[in-house]
Amino acid sequence: MAKTGMVITIGRQYGSGGREIGKKLAERLEIPYYDKELMSEAAKDSGICEELFENHDEKPTRSYLFSLVTGIQHGNVATSPMDMPLNHRIFLAQFDTIRRIAGEGPCIIVGRCADYVLRDHKNVLRVFLKADMEHRKARAIERGAEPMKAEDFVRKQDKQRAAYYNYYATTSWGDLNNYDLTVDTGLLGYDGTVELLCEYLKIREAQLAKA
Image (cartoon, rainbow, N blue to C red; front, side, top):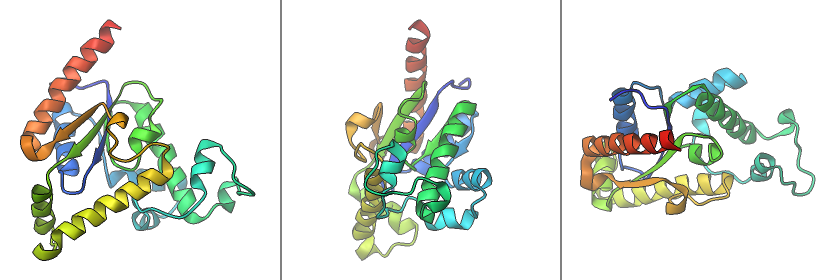
């Protein structure tokens, strides 16, 4: 398949294969892939140590960052970057890096509120990946989770991702209205999901070309 002209964002339930599918799709389309790689880019852009990005990666926080991002003020909130708590600065740095990367051309970005950050960006395909609990538990066990605690671990990871997304976005994590396409990877498998996304992209881009 030829390179796409789209930026593809992938939201995902834990254990649904977002990383693996994103990589396979990026290789198929011959476009850049960003997951953990996004932290390296944001560190370079901002001058903040990459280790600090890793420590705060997709973790919820109690802050007024929502108001800073959207421009809504709540009380006496500092608006100077140097006055912000570190976790605020880290999120905003990722926010800026996501927009920069998307502006440079087609790519795949996994997680990190990318679908929300790029909500006004042209030519974005917003995908959400899900799978049944048994499939996700198996993936968690493969990654080292204790079999008896695997379901609790999966739910905790989902809860953390949802809390992070819901805090920084005005939309809700996993809400079907936020995405162009939701795929059950447990039914299709990773290769099947990649095939589906490639076919969807062909149709979507053909429609855009006619518009």
